[in-house]
Length: 118
Image (cartoon, rainbow, N blue to C red; front, side, top):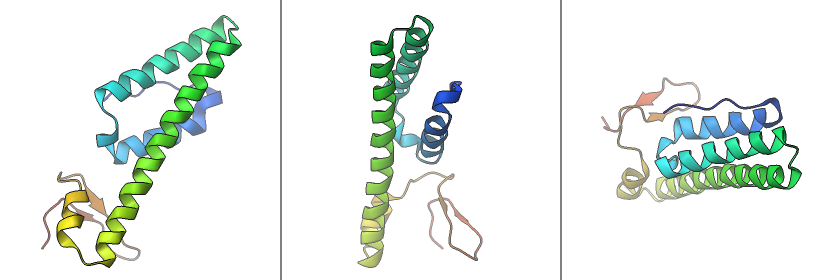
């Protein structure tokens, strides 16, 4: 997936969204990626032509996408720990990303990689 270039006014927003989508790429469908890139292009164009209404609309769209991504991650995290506290292995397995790049990190221990449980 190709990441876009963020301007300085969007640096923190872009950093957050990039991190979320890096660790949860399932949240970034092709449609969402297209929407994100389209909104960024709209924002650049609006800034170039001093169209402040269009710039605000594009900015608000980008912010909404960020909030949606953060909410999705928080909901998945809450669901996982609910399953964990209830010792629901099936529920945990349904939430865990079944790819080799999935990582579980605990303080003071080496990270666990992948989906298989030893």
